[in-house]
Image (cartoon, rainbow, N blue to C red):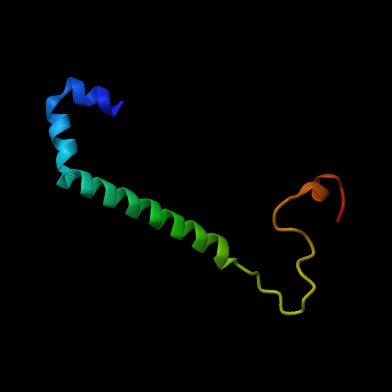
Length: 75
């Protein structure tokens, strides 16, 4: 694919020999920063783990989110 671009566009061949342009560096750094920030945010959400307040250790009488057992007529 790159070879085709170099054949069709002579300026592509010249810029490929020179290295990355300022726009290329900026785009790459912004993209990598966004992906890294998103991954850090996801890890933070997963590893932070919210715990509910349960001073006596018995837990709630019913699940706050309806689950399979609630639909089948269980506790």
